[in-house]
Image 1 (cartoon, one colour):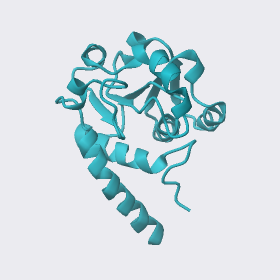
Image 2 (spheres, helix red, strand yellow):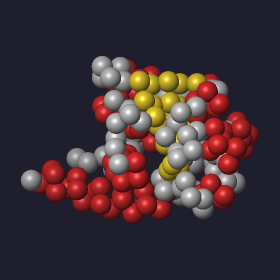
Image 3 (tube, one colour):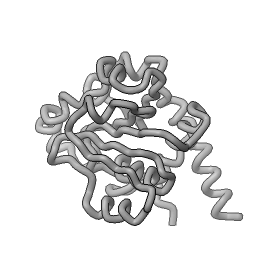
Image 4 (cartoon, helix red, strand yellow):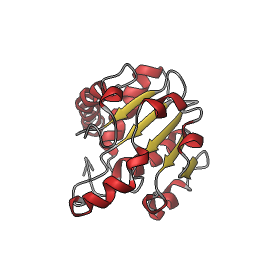
Length: 184
């Protein structure tokens, strides 16, 4: 069984993310990935796990009530090279960041919480000011669909640091590679 997507994890998306990061940065070592927004979602969970497996420094910045799931943190702690930081401080989290990732604030099943979530996450919108806090060559990723003006501004989505369309294309390539690997 291939977990393409569940409420808890999104490992196939992360394969595409890692492929994109490798294509752009030329490596998967000596990196810091920062996820901004709802850290108790499937993309953040799978990024935390993949980062722990690969020795990538992973930071999760969110409101206090939207932290990584404790079960995921327990799994992450099994990897000796895991470097996971959870915080509410955007400035601290973005310092030295190579890759900024976000996702929709209102995942499937959370539609009833839309008004609350839009207000709670407002200060966690990825915009040009936040991008400037990261490394100058930091890249931006989003697994889409993107809600411009909510979790990210149009300027970032369409900017030079955005690689989300390359990331979307890489979903196909990563899935094909996974199938070839499993069928070999």
